Length: 196
Image (cartoon, rainbow, N blue to C red):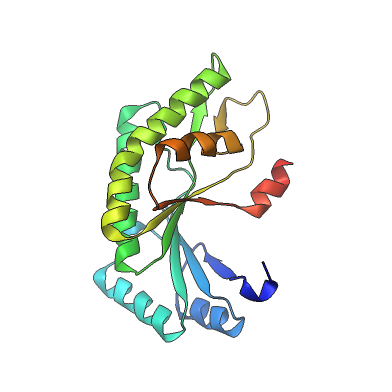
């Protein structure tokens, strides 16, 4: 791909305001990814007025929007109540993306406790993730929002838990089962380089 065809963007972690859009336009950045969290940029902070202000800024400065789910969401959690809560959050994020005219939501796959056998526990966690994605796929299709699954760095051997999505096999397994044009792979080159 030629450099002139690449689109670069800006990540917003603790706030999103007009200065971010001015910066993006000034530096010829085509998009802004809004990182949701549970302290600063929360789902609840997106009132109809705030959504309207942000969509108007995006239009004014010709910037596309995307959303990044909080890093600690875990739709593969072994505890059903936690899985349900995190899946509900993802569904609310899809609605927010639709309201903001965002092109996508980026998400990590979650983590799992590997004991007693890492390979077996990883597969069980991947299957839990797939099961939780049933409703997510449906809402992505209804709202025309892409759900981008992002790679992460491996946690060192011997840790209490490991990340899903720290290897390509996880993504091959998931994309064989999540058959929707609304599920995509997001390559984080920083994570990929650190993982080498």
